[in-house]
Image (tube, rainbow, N blue to C red):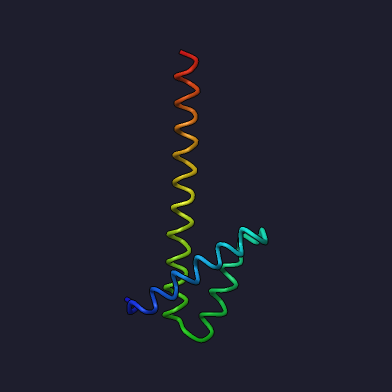
Length: 79
């Protein structure tokens, strides 16, 4: 497990990377960043990839719940 400083840096970098991805439309930018990190620190690369994946999973989970709620509301409105 990475120390807290590495985790904090990886979390910040993940937030910045996701913002750049949204701005540029390059959904795979995080893979390029991970490759650059891995060239000098496998620990940082792993912490960064974990931070990215958990955030992306959270976004997907929220999108799923929003769709489920919208479908529920649409069905309730028809009844």
